[in-house]
Length: 530
Image (cartoon, rainbow, N blue to C red; front, side):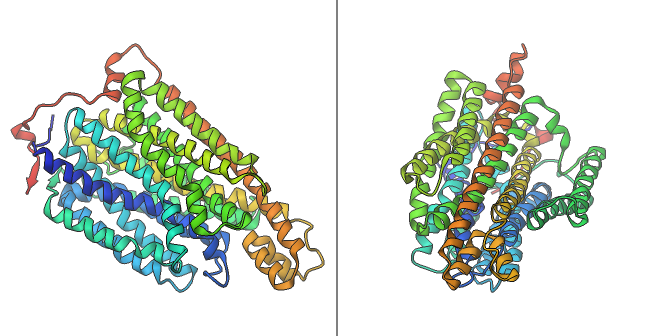
């Protein structure tokens, strides 16, 4: 078995800090845009973006992220994970500047796709470097901290965006990435070793083409359904069906390769496959819930971006507490009861939004956010560590690519399906409203609550603004029930995947790292370039 070379503990800790910063930026950017949705949708303060354009501003990032990640892992095996990590960070910074100064929604969508390229290069490299750097129990702890950074980034995005939007224009939420990237690059160049796999995985252009076109077609069909509020039109079902067929072809192609960049065979393992499915469903639900959260606080309730971020800040605190707490509870009570229970609580917290209205005490929103963040933190850190511990070290890069691709695919589908459900429910809620208005103006009000409020303000029609708020609340209730069901299905999948089988070795491998020797075998010696 291939094992990592020993590094001084101080250097290990500094490496972990660099990797945590890199991961934090990626996951922060997954949610920071949600707080800006209300501003971007405004025709005066933002870009006048439609709901579909906002879905693509998020979806283009996660789509490219998901589709390129396994290829990035193969590039790291071949050229060194430190090199790929550095290129990814530089790409992320450059495209963040582009996004900050985008002149319209189309430019923003393109820039976000470029940021997805950078993130795809970063994520597999960080996980591979982490796995090579640590061994034994220290690896489980390091992976727990690393995974917690993802949860903190997801939860902290709205708060940071609120602080920035309270003082600067919307592009500042992207410019903030640049100094953080500069600090991370300094650490990458000075302390991170250039680990490489002893046997590099081959590049996979066919898999790359099939995966990105399949995900793009599927997302387009789902988002288009939200625009048209129907599923029978050919420009809805045709791309959706094409996406499913292309992704099926992608899996078939990967299964036929001796060394696939994305190895579906890894998902055949009960713990690894079921655990990843549960994480994918969790990210699906989280992304869908985040799509309407900012619109509720800033649009329907009228809070500023800063106040909205403060209301959601208990989620960040919850994640920070939940990560290490989950690791401790797993050691005492076991992986299955802790993670399944926490995921169930997170699902119920998401579903509680179906009880919120225009006059609900806002403190309840903050309490629910804290409970949800705590539960998600307990799931993500502990479960990610368990999944990586089921794999041999030489499959760490491939396993990381699979895990992160599944997560990002869940995010792509979450924003597509969640936004579509919201758009359809809102449009139906506006049926029969303001029938005395000209058709063009009435259609504009049906696009989104933000557009309806803008029309209401221009025409002096407070009744239209109230109707839009009521339609949005109805849509949020529908969406929250769906997100709860999706997250609960993840808990069911996890309970089945982690069920006892009478084979202690398999369960132990998921909960505790297998012991490793301190020196590598000569025939499998890792290429370490200091």
